[in-house]
Amino acid sequence: MKYVFIVQGEGRGHLTQAITLCDMLRRNGHEVLEVLVGMSRERVLPHFFSEKMPCPVRPFDTLTFRYKKNKKEVNLFYSILYNAGIRQLNSYRKSIEYIHARLQLLCPDAVISFYEILSGMTQLRYRMNIPFINIGHQFLLLRPDYAFGKDTRQEHLLLRLHVLANSVGASCNLALSFYPMPNSEGTTTLVMPPLLRREIVQRKPEKGDFVLVYMLNAGYYDEVCFWHALHPEVKLRCFWDKKDMPARWKVDDTLEFCTVDDRLFIESISRCRAYVSTAGFESVCEAFYLGKPVMVIPAHVEQEINAQDAASTGYCITGNRFDISRLLDFAAGNAADTSLFRAWVDSAEQRFIDQLTRLTERPASAFHA
Image (cartoon, rainbow, N blue to C red; front, side, top):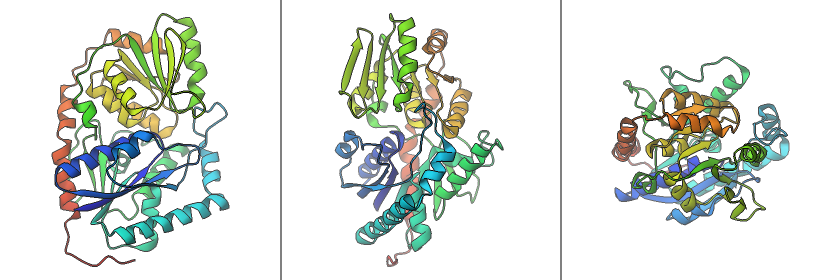
């Protein structure tokens, strides 16, 4: 089978999921023809992604979050206003046309979308005769048996609406989960294991002498520095997305900041003593798999739900700021057995190949717009 990936480029999680699934497909005789990545103008596509993908990677303009003045929390209302502006809508229209043109040219057997809303908008506009398959942790919100995200606050309602918009035109949603859940007959949202990279799965974890901090938004810099000033004896290695800074900036003997680097991050998460991050799904799963104590600090409503879900496993705690003392206290008393989680992750390849083969196989028919 031949696939085209469409990936939301905000953050790192969807990108690493795409790398992992591409490797799985190729090992099983399938091909990824091209990867289309939705990027906001504020983000830079990490070098590791283009390096790891064995096919052309083509960016396009997509919707983006806007942040509050503290550069930490998402301003949901302003995000909606910004993305609904005439200039932005015109840009997104061009992106939809571009996606359609690439799919017409490539004629894949199926499209796999990693939570990129414009892929569904493309299918809604053009009604292409091709399966669209969605992958993402967010699609758990479409399951009535999912215990989280049922709040009736405006932010939660808007998030569920956003997930529904992402599911438009899809043949099936593959919802990544920290744990197995039953898939009933006829459901279009199937629960699947996390997609963790082989570099993580094959890594032998060590217990190093530093705490790993992943703070994609530079607004958390002041919080980290404040805690560090009170606890200079604790080594911190921090990853951030600051374009105008060197790859590794050593502030002093126990504090350094690194721009996003795939190899260094994998080495760091396998060797750290504990991990603190905003509540993105992917890196939290990586830390769980490696048996690391975790603390998550959600930056927006989606991450609030991720944080509650992750904490329900017993492998992590939640917080509202980078108070690393709480993480160290948790780590000191943490002896959680992650063997069931590891077995769930290890089943991913066979489950994904089986499901994608089933969803993609169909009577041959001409591709048309």
